[in-house]
Amino acid sequence: MLTTQKEVLDIALAWQGSRALLAAVELNLFSTVGEGSTAAEIAERVGTDTRCTERLLNVMVTLDLMSKQGEVFINGPAASQYLVPDGNDYLSMLHHTAFTYRNWGALDQAVRAGTSTISTAWDSDEHRDAFIEAMHRRSRGDAENLVNSLDLSGVDHLLDVGGGSGAYSIALCQANKGIKSTVLDLPGVTQLTRKYVAEAGLSERIGTREGSYLETEFGAGYDLVLFSAIVHINSEQENQFLMHKAFEAVNPGGVIAVHDFIMSEDRLTPAKGAMFALNMIVNTRGGDTYTKGEISGWLMDAGCETLHSTRTGEMTSMLTARKPLA
Ligand SMILES: C[S@@+](CC[C@H](N)C(=O)[O-])C[C@H]1O[C@@H](n2cnc3c(N)ncnc32)[C@H](O)[C@@H]1O
Image 1 (cartoon, helix red, strand yellow):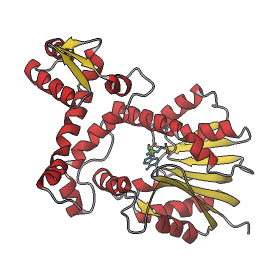
Image 2 (cartoon, helix red, strand yellow; image 1 turned 45 degrees about the horizontal axis):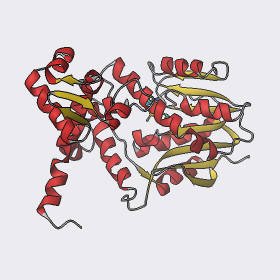
Image 3 (cartoon, rainbow, N blue to C red; image 1 turned 90 degrees about the horizontal axis):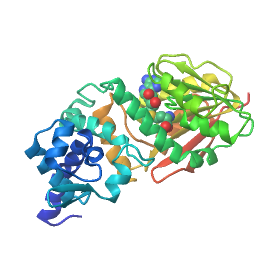
Image 4 (spheres, rainbow, N blue to C red; image 1 turned 90 degrees about the vertical axis):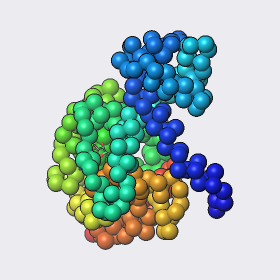
């Protein structure tokens, strides 16, 4: 437990550093610095006020993201690797993080109302595309864990609900040459799915179905229905509905797989999952992080049996359940 005033103030003011970093990202300061530039040069290139830009750059120096030699600012190693868009390790997710910051400012209102009080939709096509790209990079990074957590024997056709870029469908199809997949996602996203799938050379095996998973028919005849990073977007009732839909769509003997943050029953562990629940409260109508007991309950209520759980990451697990043969 904390005991000092300083510890309390450190938490209370931590947002200032994070907001300064996000502002620098949104203003493209890291990519504009180049091999080293003055505040006046950077301000001219990005169209900002020179004095305020200099003060923001100074804070990047105090955060150890840049150095300052005389009047010249230079990216440090972490900024060059993670904050400049041309590298493989670029944190494209930060543009989405900057967007969600606006909703976090209304956390008290959301807690009063029991739901996000401002629009949760993507505010532009660029924002949608950047989010899907960020998800793609993240999912590519941990695809091996996901593939290893699933028994793919007997799987011919996969339904990847809210599959985004198709990163996991791509990994599953690459791991098992017999699999074909359908990625269901929102209008606007499936065109991106098709682009990523074509880049992977898998357009003949991975197709798309466009619409909201809450309204669009899933179809039938799947051996595996995957919900990866989907249940946290939805309310408990919506997830119960989705598991019933998946149960109808999957073949007897087939599997429904839920890959997500899985909370301890007291909802305190992992701590990042407890924080992520607030992220869902401010950014969705009814999203949350759920416990193993809750997710298992939805799968069992839908009619599944033989539940299996595998840890796939620091905060994530795969819960699979089978539809009985008869
Ligand atoms: C957090 S991303 C997960 C993407 C992918 N499944 C993964 O694990 O990397 C959530 C995905 O769900 C999609 N999505 C959100 N709401 C949806 C809805 N109502 N119907 C269909 N897709 C939806 C988003 O477009 C996005 O691709």
